[in-house]
Image (tube, rainbow, N blue to C red; front, side, top):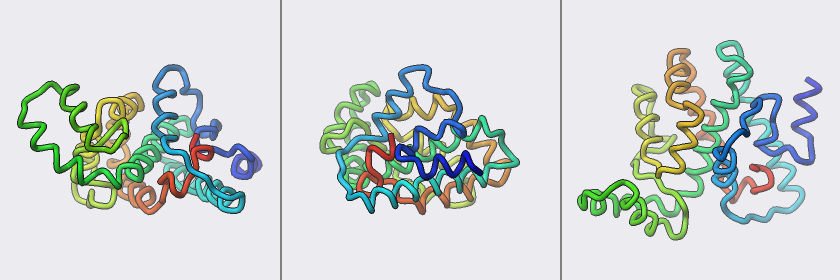
Length: 207
């Protein structure tokens, strides 16, 4: 309990610094990409709001860890919680540009261009972001029946760099394991109900 409390109340209790949960994984450029994706936009918050947001983020992390306890090893928590947190963060950032990207998808795909060429065209519709998602789904629309298949398809809708992070964590494998343990739907519901957008959670707290 002491370790948990010290991390929740730390002045630097950012998501990526919960090392007792997540273990050592900062070995390559995937860590750099993850930090970049989690901390896109400049945001400002007052000290009261910042403290509350930090506590909310800590509570969110531990609530997911509590769901995983007993079915997964502690060393696996990070490879589940990190990708889900990234996914929720990306949803918040993409909210304003998602419709514009979806409107361009069919036109771009009809050109039969290589994926990298398609990506360049679709990025123009994001209004300056470095990634996008072409799936019509989000965490709130995955449903319960077939949730594993739907979530995997949703992840595949991301642009190359974003997908690479999920692949690094072997996220598809954990999706299957969570589904087999009857935890996937519970985890998704917990994540989708948590606002991790840059408007709510600052870059400092995320990274």
